Length: 486
Image (cartoon, rainbow, N blue to C red):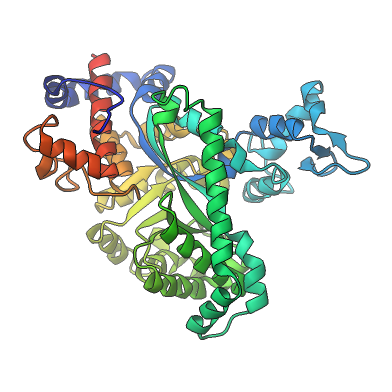
């Protein structure tokens, strides 16, 4: 049977739902006057899932530096980067005795204290990934999971599986206009073996996470109860034949391994190949979806702003991701109002229930888009579902609580608004199974649970559907939180 992490009577849950909103709205209004207390309130508040989180970008610089010292890597002081040890480099263990060096590396690996000058904030952000890339980030999933659990998150989709391993195969096979023939060549060249290798990497990553969190000894801890799933990353700044191999490999992996719940395209959207080949990339995704129709798709689209690319580059990315790339969710979506027929696109996203993963801190740091310039209120006004997420919390020096704090402080969101976005993070997740809710208005639960959580029908329904279990657990968490906040 489904084991709930928080056991609360149905009477308490019903009372909290009935009496909670007005009381919680008053509490949130009071806390707006005291940012430290607001932060503490939001830290404890259930936050559901983080649906847009890059593993390597989620690890704090301190975590990379400790891992580098443990792995006996070295520091290239000229580049302020980690590297395998060669002559002239400094042992990474030096960070344990040299605070000046350690602080310089933290600044190099993140946006801490960054001041734009010769280098833009955009470039400093993306350059950071090469500086700590020598450390195997897949060994550090436990750090990210523990931080999420501490903030009362219950679900995490990590972009953690890179498509780079398929690139050599794509380079050897090449690419023609006949995508079917090219796919056949990839399969003949050993695609299945590469997929098996990627699946083994997921095995190792999962085992490392569970071991480091002590889940064998304490499976009911908050960190071990956190459900972690993975999103496969296509590196779209690679040559197009390699991108195609990555896409086919990623779809094949997601179809074979239920822990890999979706495919995404990553790397800067304003890069040369990302811009030049964008339409082709969407055609490739469209082709892969026709072969693997059950694979979920979430796409970075609209992580752009005026001046970063020419005006015409702002006009079509989100629409093509939705209409050609089969995106079920959009990551960022900042440039939506620069799209052709933007209001028509917003209505289409609303009607097709295509959610947007909103990353407020990242959009501010990378694009300089914040406050009234950010389209979060526009999406909400048009009824497009949104969920707050972190993007790269380690590089940004943030976490999900701070995304909620920024949203509350900037957009005067109500407690009901927050609760809706948190529920969206589970409802629009790629967790398997059907919802705990009858529909996405969150007014009534699924028919199987309409007579109560303790009924045999509801128990069987929750046992069968992970998404429904997550939804039910989230409501228990809200009930406990609202009761404690009384």
